[in-house]
Length: 298
Image (cartoon, rainbow, N blue to C red):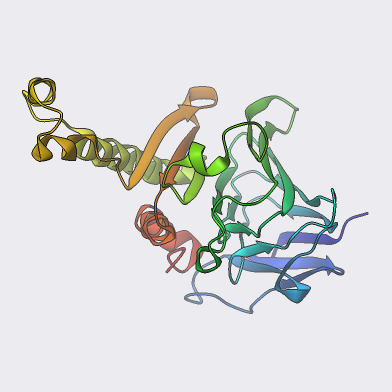
């Protein structure tokens, strides 16, 4: 049984929500207008009663974005996942169908899992040949002010992008689990955020090209080692000036193309601060303002 259903269709030539249903613990807020009146985009805010996802919650949503429509799914704040009771796992499942020439932007704030939390989410997107899709999927290490860093039990996030004739374009799962000898804190070093950004479709070509160039330039600058650097390291490990070349970058990103004829671009990020990821998303998605009415994450 779905806990949420949203249908967006053209009404009088404009994108409109023609069906909206939600029940506890889920709620949708749909403002009348976000951005200029000339922008044809529907914004949908998803939130949960109590300000977070409680142990054992199971949320299932279905979105249908009809041909030529534009819709944005976002949140008002980070998605908090509270402590688990025993082995109970909180779950979210979303399936979205995106029509021809339609755009669906899923741009939430990050997931923040409390200590001992267990959380699993799966998102399935079914696309037409010329659909457009943006996915931002990210998680922080936890509540830093309480000293919780990667202290949850389980986090699993699955994203599938599939054609309308059931051909898989993108199948991805991130699994973080507290078990074994090495803890998640050790595996993550000092990185406090991991994120994935997916850009798909003809309306996003200019943003895809820009983000690929920006990531290439950014990482080239951060990871560049001056000529002769290795020989200096070899001469003396005690040289304090040499240590700066081994300092971990505070922000790491990689970028790759996928799908038929390079229809999609995926960016993966590891960062030491949440603020740096917000700034990256704001900068790289600024080109979507004409499509969505406002720049995401401003």
